[in-house]
Amino acid sequence: MRTSRGWWVLAGIVVGALGLAISDLTAALLHIRESPVVAVAEGVTALTPGAVAEWAIQTLGAYDKFALVVGILVILGVVFGSIGALARRQWWWAGIGYGALAAVGVVAVVTKPAATATDLLPVLVGLVVWWVAFALCAMWLRRWELVLASEDPAHDPTHTRRGFFLLAGSMAAVTAIAGGLGRVAGQARRKAEESRRLLRLEQVTKPVPPAEVRVDVEGLPPWQTPAEDFYLIDTAFIKPTIDPADWEIRIHGRVKHELRLSFDDLVAREVTEDWITLNCVSNEIGGSLIGNAWWSGVRLAGLLGEAGPLEGADAVLQTSEDGWTCATPLAAMTDERNAMLAVAMNGEPLPIEHGFPVRTIVPGLYGYVSACKWVVDLEVTSFDEVEAYWTEKGWAEQGPVKIASRIDVPLADSTVPSGTVVLAGTAWFQHTGIDRVEVAVDGGPWTEAELAAAPNVDTWVQWRAEVEVTEAGDHTARVRAIASDGEVQTGVVADVLPDGATGWDEVGFTVDDAS
Image 1 (cartoon, rainbow, N blue to C red):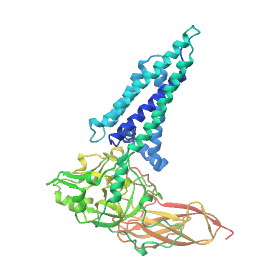
Image 2 (image 1 turned 180 degrees about the horizontal axis):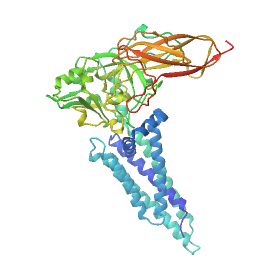
Image 3 (image 1 turned 90 degrees about the vertical axis):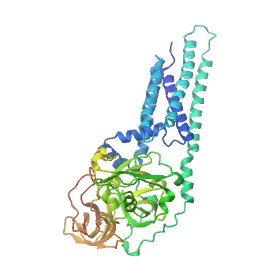
Image 4 (image 1 turned 135 degrees about the vertical axis):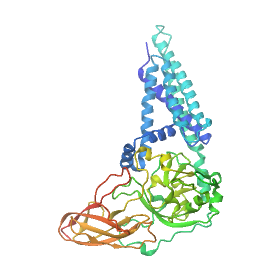
């Protein structure tokens, strides 16, 4: 006679959760950034086709990583329960099942850049916990079966049943405690935050946006984007936490002289500062994956010039501390634009989420080919010799930003009074600049908008236009920008893949006939 299948499923799930919690705690105690679950999640992200990754970004936004981790945990719960159910008939299924899961974790960990033998310890500890804990659960369940099968009335199943429940409950409690300790033990983040708080960057100045860069329209987003509102796109499930004292960058490859700089070496050099707008290649027409900030850092042109790129080199492969890569045109990092190794954002040391202690900024390029957060390595090379993270997923090799504009006022589907309707928004074409912006209502003629000032060609510009709309009902406004070099923003609609979206932003609004 066998115990209920449900108790074996429960045992598999409880044991599985315990192993994950102990594994996570081990990773935290050893100051390993990635627990096995995180390593698997990042591995799944790396293997995800570009179109699927883009769908996740557009559909889930900032919750894409959370959704993936939850999905992985749900799948693991199903697998754990299945292992328990299979082990009810053949005990060795538990050994094989948990062993297979550990093998997946091992592969995910060892394929990360700079993986060491120490990084495998959380996986191995978790596997041992799985095997031992399930053996204990199986022992009590088998005893329960033997008692149920016995015809001796003196054999009461209450004791063995209670023993299994106490064991499962104890494992659940240990899982909760280990999970909490894992969070407490994760002091690397707190240490990095403390280092950031105490960091003094003497050459960095506080930004004061020029008054003439803003048009006076209620509801228009700020010209300077606060760090907490700046868009976040990266592949790191756990953000790298690097103490500036431990940071170093290596500039090597096809160069005459390899350079290695510590953080102190870097900030001892002359610091450059500028207003620069960054936007993601995944930003759809009218989207919000764009921001403008005051960046402070050291120009890459000087650093790369000191290294001395060899003839034939046309790219720089950038590598983040978490292994993410991007290939950037060497010319864009060494020409007159203010490409830099940034150490500050809006007058403060970089937030951890934005690349503390050092990240790369290259005006005029989409982030996927230029904006390397937590950057630790610059390899001078050529495009025909390397492939980077997103280009392997179908994005274009080089990603110069495209001219774009957006309507921010009025909001979509809002109601406005009849008569003079104020339209306002932003336009951008980094490293080229915006000459003018035009709007049209209901397919009518283009009307030139009033432009605010821009401190340089690498920032966005705000615009404002007044149009007469007296007919009650629904209307549609659209916008287009014209660049300083004469390029007119195309109305041809193109997806963000492979090198950025095109098309005119449109906003529908309703004119109130009672006004």
